[in-house]
Image 1 (tube, rainbow, N blue to C red):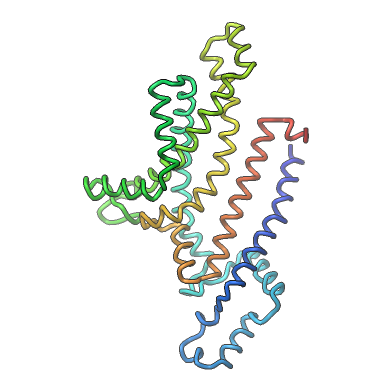
Image 2 (image 1 turned 60 degrees about the horizontal axis):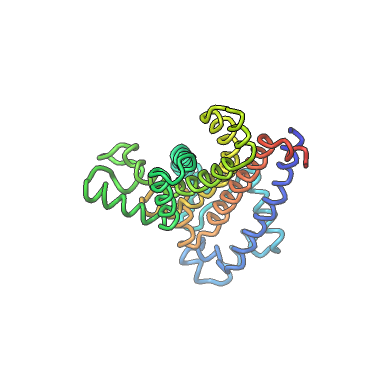
Length: 314
């Protein structure tokens, strides 16, 4: 197992380097000149001064030299500075990342409990009221964009009822938990619908399999058939979906954080793209890519733990 994990970790390194190279190259092709942001108004009036500044910053070096300088600084923990406001990018990420992570983690836990439970019950009691209601909300949650749910929740609980705040992470008039409820609920609704659908479909497939029919013919109690034979096999593909959904929650938080003015990574990505702050865009994009690769690694390890044939290469 350790050899399998080491192999997968080594495979991540060239993938991450390739992604970083593509990100760096793509942003260089945009034609954004950082000197125009860094130069003072007096210096900007002189082409000679601008050229001296480019030379001092190494912007006239060949593309490959600039890339290796950037990736080397990244590996050393030097993420550079924002060209929009001069803020240290590493400090910016450390300040904003916890807000996004706590939002994504709570949404992942709540949606997992609710979505998998309703999906499994819908499969067990197929064509019942629970099944019909579960399928309806599953389709509704996937058909309607996340931001629409957020706007509806704001209209009901903030504007109409005045129970919860609709923006920010904390304020003098409301607790941190009160600020947290609406954005977390919005992310939970969207993800819950996906898990309900996958859980129901997988459970139905398992319940119709031969080994479940054999277990019933042996006279094994129905609850034991569901718990021991059906649930354990039906939940494996769902766990894979869960691992992949966490980085998507982080990346997808851009819209939710904009709706609720939540001070996380999503709002940093939005503001940096609008401002043309390409050093911040590069680092945040690479961060999301690294999260996706990590999720892929966890999926491989989890699959190997659940199915030894994967570990043996069969």
